[in-house]
Image 1 (cartoon, helix red, strand yellow):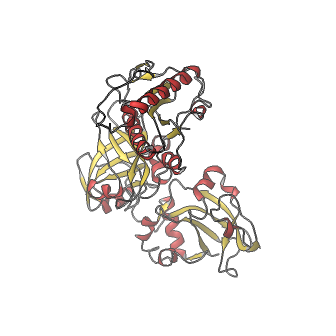
Image 2 (cartoon, helix red, strand yellow):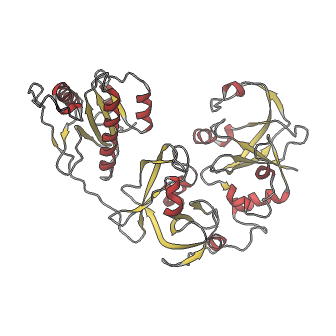
Length: 463
C-alpha cells in the first residue's frame, strides 16, 4: 500500500468554502496528472491546502483506478480549465480538519518530513508520493501520539505568568506550530498566541491593551481579507473546544508567558482594516477581544444612542464673503440646503420603517443621522454631490463614516456605516470600493436597501 499527497490551490478551487458547505463524503474524486499507473485502490491520501496557511487538512483513501472525465463543480475559479477533459482519482475522505491543519511549518521541522516532495517541488502536479516516514509524520502531528512523536508533552500547564521560555522548548512541552502567531495544539488543550509589535506591525498586526485591561489581538493572515478559518477559528471556538488561550510576548527565541485568557463574553471580536505585509493594500482583519481568565466578564451598559432627530431648516440662506469658499461643500449655499433636504428625507423614511432617527449627543461621533435596531446601529454621513465635487465628497464621506463606525463599535454593538449621497456616483468603482470597506453607498431611490428585512422583529445590520 502506497501513500500519496493531493494538493489543493485555494485560488483555483475554493477548498474552505467547499468543506464549510458540504460533508466530507461530497468529495469523491481529485484531479491528477501523473503516476496514473502507480496509484491503486486502498492507498492512503493526505489532502494538502496550499497558500499562506499551507498544511494537511484531510485524510482518506483511494477507492479505485484513475478515470477520465470532463466538467467541474461550482467551486472552481478557472472555469475554462475546470471544464477540460482530465484524469481524476476516486477518493473517500475519512477525516477533515480544515480548522486545525497539520501546518507546513510544523512538518518542515520534523526530520521525517523535511525532504518531502511537496516541500522540495511544491509546483509539481498531483499526486505527490509520500514515504512511510513522511506519512507517519503527518499522522503523528495530527494525532499527537505514536512512536515517532518524541516525548509525551505535559498535559498540565506549569508555566506561571511572567515566566520566560525558549519557544522551541515551549512547543516540545505543549505542541503546536513553531512558526505561527496563533498555534493550536493537538497534543494539549491549548491555543498558544504570540504577540510582538517589532515583527507584527509590518504585517498589519496592531495588537494593544485596552483601558479595561482587555487585550485586542489581530487575527491570522498577512494578505487579503482575514477569515474565521484555521487558527482564527481555533481562537473563536476555544471555549467550545475546551482549549485555553495562552498569550505570550515575543514571537521568536525567548518568549514571556503573559497568562491565560478567554474571549470576552459580550464582545468577542470585531472587524477592522489594516495594511497587508510590507505596507501593502488595505484588507479586512479580525480583532479578538481577550480578557484574563480571572477577570469577570464585561457587562457594557451603553446608554441610548444620541438624542431625537430635529428636522433641519431647508430654506434658511447663509451669507458669506464672496472671496471665501468653504472646504466642505455642505457648509454653505446650495450644498448646505441639499444636505439638509437629504437628512430630513432619510429621517422620514426611517420613521416610516418603524425606527427612531437620532442626532448625535455630545459623547457621540458627529454623524448626520443614526438609528438603533436590536442587531446594531445604522450610522449615516450625508453628502451633497455634484459632478464637479463628486470625488472629493466621496473621499471625505467614506473617511468620516468609517470614523463613526470605529467609534460606535466600542459600545459592543454591530454597526452598518452608510454614506447617503445626493446622486449616484458616475463611476461604479466607488460602490465596489465602499463595499470592500463594508460601507453602504445609498442615494435617493435606493434607500429601500437599508430597510429590507430590517423590521423591528428581524433586522440584520451589515448583512
